[in-house]
Length: 138
Image (cartoon, rainbow, N blue to C red):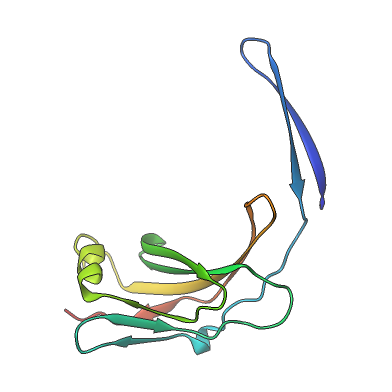
């Protein structure tokens, strides 16, 4: 529940430590509709990713693009400002990211998460898109 919580910890040496955490409660963020997510292999081997950011409340501070194989074996996690809705991953980076993980471990997938942070910089909410698979070519 939304509230301020104070905790007390007694160390092995007998000292008491205390701290307070302010939690905003449940925050439901909008999510990127996976139907708006697109990828394009460019002629030079770069990978262009694009999506449509959600509009309206509640607000979010940033979006995070996640590229991974298997069950979230991450190749790339990139946090971007909330007004960004596309990015290009250079072919040289693609080769480095996937050199040891693909094709033996499974298909490459991506998703976009909206993220909201409070005043203390802690991430209290995420709104995840559905996962989109990227057909891979050599």
